Each structure stands twice: as structure tokens, then as C-alpha cells.
Image 1 (cartoon, rainbow, N blue to C red):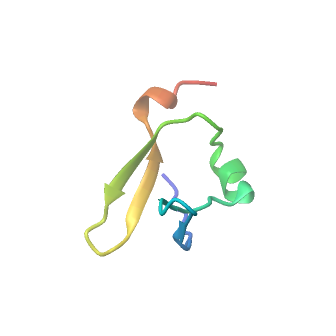
Image 2 (image 1 turned 90 degrees about the vertical axis):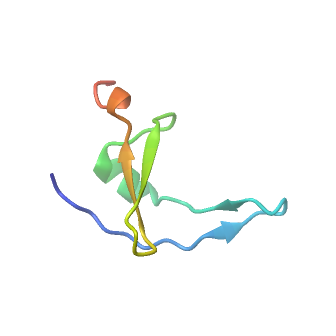
Length: 60
């Protein structure tokens, strides 16, 4: 399994909700698409790993 590392800035919307954007190029490289379920894993060092949910791996 390949590892791709990207650093993104967390932003805040007008309602105070936090978010970050995943660049379109990265989404395409990963083969992700809108509506996929993403699993977040705390790496324990202040960083997080994102992976597609096992149930989405078989979706075309």
C-alpha cells in the first residue's frame, strides 16, 4: 500500500465549524469520489490518517 502525505490547513466557516479541503488532484489520484465514507485514524503525534471505509472499497 502506498502512502501519500499532504498537509492541509484547518479553516473555520461563519458558523464556527471547522473544515479542510482535499485538493481535487489528490482526490483524483486516490480514486476517491463524493459520497465515500472516510475513516479517520489518530496517529498519536498530532496528525491523522484518512482511509476509505472498507465498505466503500468494493464500490465502483
